[in-house]
Length: 197
Image (tube, rainbow, N blue to C red; front, side):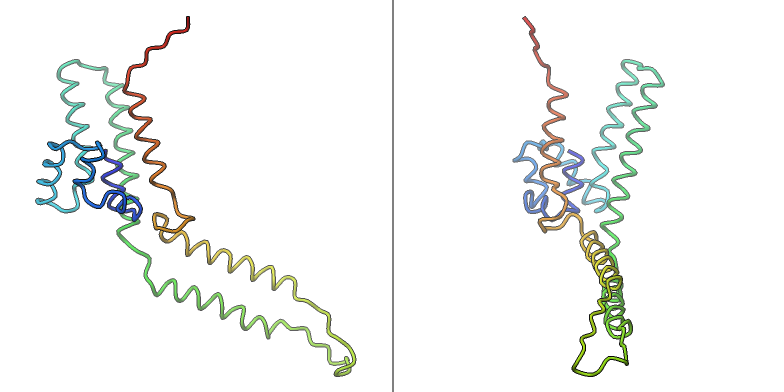
């Protein structure tokens, strides 16, 4: 549920699929009680809603520790993994929150195209001995062409990586990933009756 709530806030595709947090209830990813708790948290602090499921997990683990006394190593490993998961989500949230300035992309585009515009004229190999109109200059700047393909290719890749969760066909398929993770989590928690007879 945490992944759905969090990724809904940073992905355009997930936001189209779930326009409001209440739509997570209709999909069976959130209960009414959890929704009310999230909304009350959202009213207090608008940026903390995505961390609420992690706090719920920690409370469940604390209750489990008081009732069943699991081994300290097991609890420590679980909380360490939970902390790493929260840190990775926080980094993703910060990357989405702090956008690359528009001026940076404009300067990078201008520098890339200006470099090769001037290279088009500056790297010409003119042979003055050729008689005008009688002989053809067949020298092709192969390395300049290869350099142009690499630089412009890297520039285009950089532009695509600026919004990895956008609506383009080449963007990350979060809907598929979240559906798969949701099905896997249900498969892990559901008991299976295996009979090999």
